Image 1 (cartoon, protein in one colour):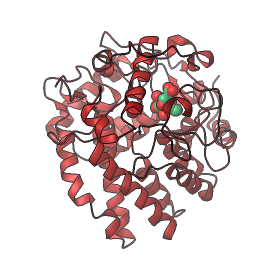
Image 2: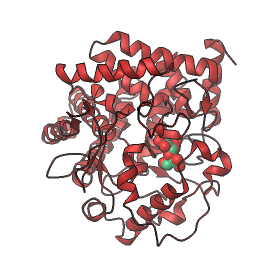
Image 3: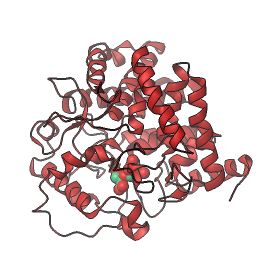
Image 4: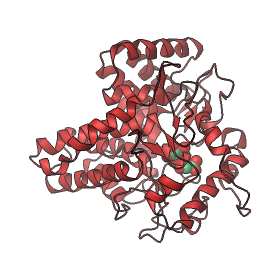
Length: 420
Ligand code: 9WN
């Protein structure tokens, strides 16, 4: 049902309030009852519209789960809840608070910058959060960067945040799941199984968790010896942008020490991102760091490097050609996977649907490169999706049909801070 922008504003604020668990947010009631890493960073930018204090708290509760090695886990299990699988008893990370054993795209420094620029985060609290971001970036450099190529990769599809994107298929299929004990998924009791990853994929997701447990969650061993390590243009691009934001803010507050290591890390990270450019495809794509195989189709992550400020004129031309082809095929940009690829699936999670938070970062990058028209296409489509469909987890790029979970925190945040 079409709602007016003012009605959607009110609903968005109500969703953020309803998903507030007292200092941290859950992505949505039922399906995801814990704090998720990149969801929280986006949520903070949404909360800032109602309360700067609540926005800052969101980031503080996120970094409360940071590991001694600097990793900010992808889930923090502040309180038990039987509604999600795999819970803390499956991860066995022995952390306090209990957490998962992998990370997610480091949107944290981007959110810190947004709050600092709005004037709701300053002084010691800003410095503390920047220090947490710096330690998390150092973790990526040490435990998620292939030293030979400088490519930043993921050791689990869940780390990418784009869980069942077709580019992970081959690397995931090679993961041995024969020893995984039977388990009961909870996601398909909340959501139609046709909109979620398959059983075979879930078994391999759990096999990767079991590998982490077997090596005592030694994050370098997981990268070097683990069954899955794939270069990800999404996480690599977000990290480059996050490093730039960290450095800018550290300089602004006269704490060069906090951003000091960025000078060392950034050139390598930019080289690594360039190594994810596929000339055959004319786009950034994944690179299996075990087999050398590159992804063969564009995904929404192919456009994230605009936000990292690394795309040259020739690359821009080729990415724009893909963008325009997708824009002609899809009523709503940006599909999470190429609609011309045989693996495209309009409804299945990251194999086709549009996700507003990815649109948010793509539009930001396009606008910064001076491409107001394409940025506006992405923003306008995001706005139209919510106006017509509400605050769903994801949407069909072909029809705009709302999909996945309802009343989503980051979709509400994206509406308030980007789409409306
Ligand atoms: C696994 C919370 C998270 C998002 C991810 C999205 C989905 C989890 C799941 O939900 O992943 O982390 O169980 O499906 O893919 O991007 O952070 O909203």
